[in-house]
Image (cartoon, rainbow, N blue to C red; front, side, top):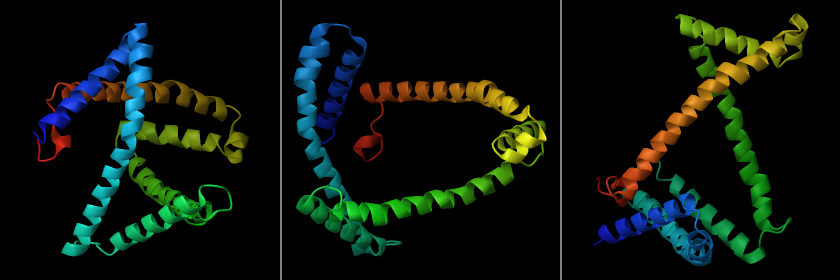
Length: 209
């Protein structure tokens, strides 16, 4: 029963969403989904958040107890959670309050640091990918050089046609490949969703299939 009930909830909820997405009937669109299903979803969301918080607490507590690798960082989780919770519940989210001060002076600088570090990883990946070891890599190298030169003033001075060529590369071959990837991701998502709806995929229940 520990797995049967959650599995039935997922299957029923999934088919309700499918009916709402594909059925044009007013009863399903308005009376059932908007007036019945959505309010119940909003009512259950706090319990889902509470379950997530309990799961995080149990995971970090177990890491500290077992002295798992990098267990010291779990203390930062507890400290951050308690401090931000007290600041949010005590002073709200108004500008100038403790929570917004923490966000502007801690969260935003850390996010900027992470994005700045990504630039070095991107440069390293580009160096490895742009080596002209094959015809495909050569095409990638030439296209990348053209696109990058078109974004800086020196490239425009080298040739007035570079911006137009760069835009063509972005609009035609690049966009075509992006649409192919998006189509593949969409088909994979549909296949995974069907496996979950039909009860074939059960790994989210824990303990494997």
